[in-house]
Length: 162
Image 1: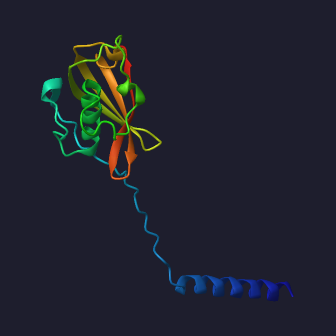
Image 2: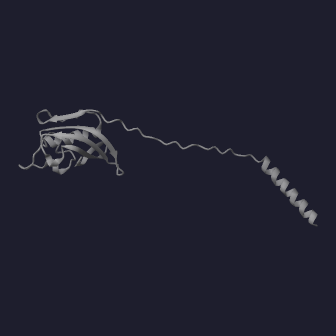
Image 3: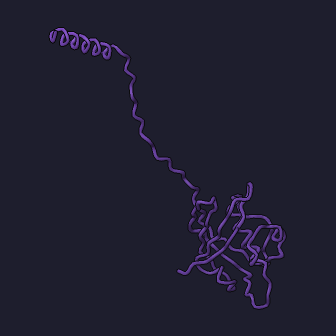
């Protein structure tokens, strides 16, 4: 009886092994994951300068983000410039008081760009001006931009000490 059970076990084992050998084997292909790097356009190496008597409504660049910064700077210099009242800019840009030292000239150079989690973008600038303007036109000035449909608007401006 033991010999029959062992013989049946061996026949079953050989049959199963033959089945596995004849079965179609699917190839497992290992695909390496590649890291996708999104290349941001390089910031322009330009010093942007604006004077009150030379301001125009038109932007000097076709980039919507750079144009939003330019508009904020122009409206800082002259809040009565055409298009400023319709622009969605921080309210303090439009303040008028005799104690406010509003600049009539501002120069800036874009130095860095950071994309935030909430789809906003920060642009870091090295800026200078001929006024004090709440300390927001000397040194490292940061413009926070938010998407507005197909355009961008400046939501906040702040400065950091260096």
